[in-house]
Length: 360
Image (cartoon, rainbow, N blue to C red; front, top):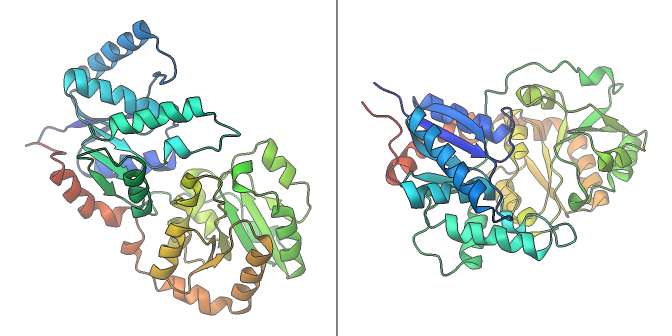
């Protein structure tokens, strides 16, 4: 059998990006050679000569590697892939893991940028072989936003937990927390998530013999949250050690706030990672998370978005009957929450879209 190859395009993703690693595992498990490539396209700047040069360069690379498919992961790579399809008929997938045109509030991103991103979505999605979306709520949003679009092949592939993250964490958290029950948030820190109340939440948890533990990439916003001694910051845990680290915790926290419709319809990777390590979960009452709480009753406990006091009360409730809630998490079948468990379904939607991953 001769193997086929896919170009996985993004503007700046690193090779350890959790979504990239998931797709790499899927393609390689199907015998496809996976080539991750950062591209230089700019959807805001009409530099025709530079863009023609990039198109020709990418075409040369695709031909040299005999790649049969592009997988684009942001507006820039989506637009580049669109032109490759228009000019050279090289098929592509558009991965809409974010609603890019609604990703940031107007206070951060002006109408100019939003309109260009919306133009990419309207241009790329009808031409893509598949538009990958992480939940049905976002499919419904796209259909409402762009009712005139015809023949868009939306496919829902959830951001489930990837078992390839199997390295051990160098940090053993209970040696730092003096036996307190831990509440863990691991992820992104920025003003749009309204995490300013984390110090108050940490102090409330401390009074209830619990410890708030944070991990993620350090920035100025996070530094403000660390002003409270009640917060324990574990650093930026590597992707391949994330599951091992989360498994040391007692209660897992997903903290999102509906700053934009993209946040309101969030589909966080961490929910399924928390499920994979059998932890009771605290999550905001948002549409997709409500759906997951109904699918995994007694495991995901909802609080009002941004309300640290409600979050604290739910944490106390879980802690008071911890063994009961932890047992419910342990009963979840791994196949229902794992990325790999979706592979047969993914095979079927690739085939339905006319994408043949291997040839004899």
